[in-house]
Length: 471
Ligand code: 6PG
Image 1 (spheres, helix red, strand yellow):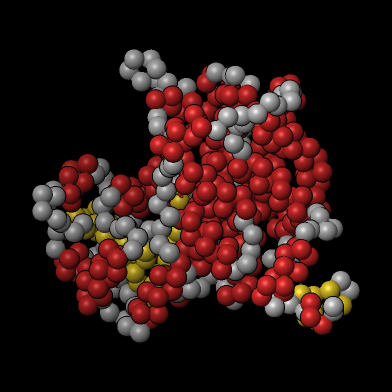
Image 2 (cartoon, helix red, strand yellow; image 1 turned 90 degrees about the horizontal axis):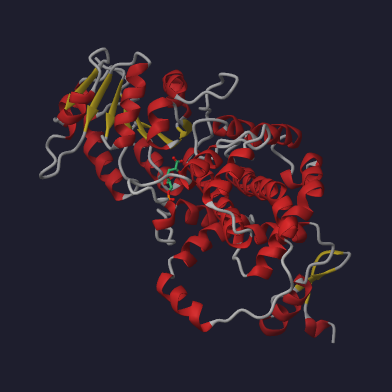
């Protein structure tokens, strides 16, 4: 009888199976076969080390029967209706207290729906965000489980065994919370991923167009910015990818069409931020930047139509000196946008998410792993999950030390016509957060004038006024 069954032998499913097996667990694997794909299980089994205890199945009932009592089935299929159809097939073969785990990038509301549906059938359900791509799945992913706590109790040691470990050896796998909290946190992880990727792209663009640096110099810069406070996975891969050459010794990056795609988790983060009234401007602008890049044919035409006016001189030295502090502060605010969204939505949903656990889980294995999280761990500890992280004195110190660099980067980029959607939104966000007076009073008077929506007045707590009572 095997410890765990994995349904779905895409690269993530295969690598998770190998990871579990390398830690001494016995695994059953199954993949639904479509026409022309009948070798998926046997092809995988051919690759498996003979020391590993992995059994491949082409029959669903044999796959399920091969599992130990209190069966654990990890489903690694595409999020959405495919997962629902897999659940429909497997549920009749399971009994009370068996556990289904969804390890895909599901929408957290779908996870909640599935949790309620399966609890009626006495099946425990876990929605587990898994980050780190195929390499993470094999060597140790970051894992964000949520849903049925009694199921977590049974799987926690297995999951911690296969997860990534931070630099002190702690597992990057912590209980996140009930409902779809695990998938919600993975969604926000991806929102932060979008923001940091776009910040890196904008800083690459500034160095290329404004400073006229070549790929090697830009690559060296990203390597040099791998400091104790900022070291991160995305800088590491960027630095390598900038100088990756094809067989003809040309940079591959320079041949790639500048049109970025998305699967929807960034969009879902933005939808959640609007649903919960929590601003995440850096993440929203990163999603927008991907959409704008998709206007490829329009951009080619508009390049001919729109001419750039005369501009004042760019200060290249100032730009070069501002790069590191500017990128640091923008990345810091990407994490803060995401963490604040998690903190507030947890309060609103009674998820009781401990932000300290989120930091622990993200420290290694995932795409946004970064040493900035060790600093954020102290910030989160101060705030005790109840106070806005933006109010923290350590954050204020970083803003005060680095804000002028970020501003100089943005000003010079705008003067030179280099788009910096996320960097500029970071500056505007910080400016808005510290504004004693925003022009929202004008919005309010307009709303009341045309829609009788009412407004509050300065120093008159909560009372609603209308123009017709005043004039
Ligand atoms: C991860 C990644 C992974 C995937 C995303 C990105 O944490 O391992 O986030 O989940 O790469 O789906 O998707 P898009 O950029 O295509 O939206």
